[in-house]
Length: 590
View (spheres, one colour):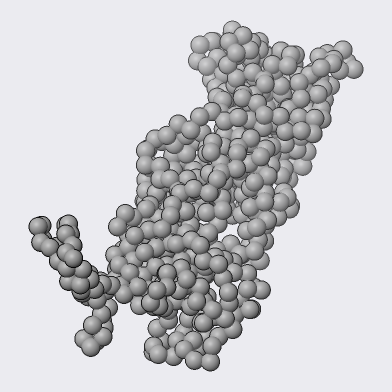
């Protein structure tokens, strides 16, 4: 019998007998091998020390026997080498190992090999303790950081193992390799993810406010959720290291960790955030302070920026929270943080993401308006937009109004209007004889050094003189149905329309020492400003009394990390009844 073959097995038109064809195919046959990628709960990879190699390790596995499938060979090798019985049902990689890639002796007649890498899963301590090594061949096992695989394995084996590990994290199916190099590299391959050691940050996670007003905030990071439930992750193009958006506070953040993470997210990824929600903090036993964590809605991205702090342009990807944790070494505390992340995701009305390949975000992207989750009457009510049109944030100077106003503007994706800007506009278009109170500090520059009680009387007079202008701004936004946040020293509780469209909250700190410290932090060049702090506390007491009389909530600025959340909760209920004074409150005190 003759067999007609087609390209690429032979030249066109040639014919062979079955025996000739079998000999031909046998002459070009490759070896078949199998190996298994196993990790522990820290993401470290299991390698075997063997007695026939001097210092070089291998993954569990070996040659495929005659008539045996690669998956069956993997099961057999695990039983022989580790003494465990496992189910092997997921391939991670198939690698063509060329003859020239292996320094094999000529007498071995090495023709090349197809080596299959299978997923052995993540083993817990009980599974690891069940390992029983044979009397010969395997001398010991070790779990190593993925970036250290080149120190333990042959270079080609390390490349293959890392490619298989990235494929396992990515979840797009098995990858095809040639000598350990992917034919179609993913963004994880191109970034070289896991080629540098992960930093072991096994810091305890505390789902609570940072203890003590003086505890320094050393870091502020955010789990920024896209509408499909995945989060924004940044990859360093130089090292392949992964990180969440965020960073360390700078003086311009004025001690507000929300301002820190929003600034960093913009600088690192041009990311726009809304509905920012506090999760908790990490504590480092060796460095006093807190590393705070937030969740937020990712509403859009600009073009990839150059981070001014590192002079790098990060690769931006969407990954599930679980995929993200596989790129970190956060230890057991990561489980509790992940629980808090998913609790926040549910409050933000974001679905849980299915396991899927990561997606690179290479250009600008609009991810849609967020759906807001506001805590109302003990339940999480999902809203398409704020149910107020004007949110007034009042209080004396040095209370944190601007910081929380900016955080709330980002949370609700609405503009922020500062009363100081209204004052500047009036000063520019009026004369002192028109509005003497508004011009007072310019016409009487030494008056600010008078007794604190006298300065407070003047501030009250200025606030009352500005009330008509502020009321006009409020009425305009209510009438045009355009939400806005209004903050400033001179806004009064009664300046807003007493309806459900307008809400207010006033911040007050009664501790002069803390207000002095806040000024010193903001303006260190001015030194301690005790007189100014005294004025602020006295004026703040008057504003707080006016607010309480109108049924408007008054809250303490500290702790900073959850101030925006507390303000949002304080104004979350629409007014429904007049106060005992006969006035209709802007909001009811919770």
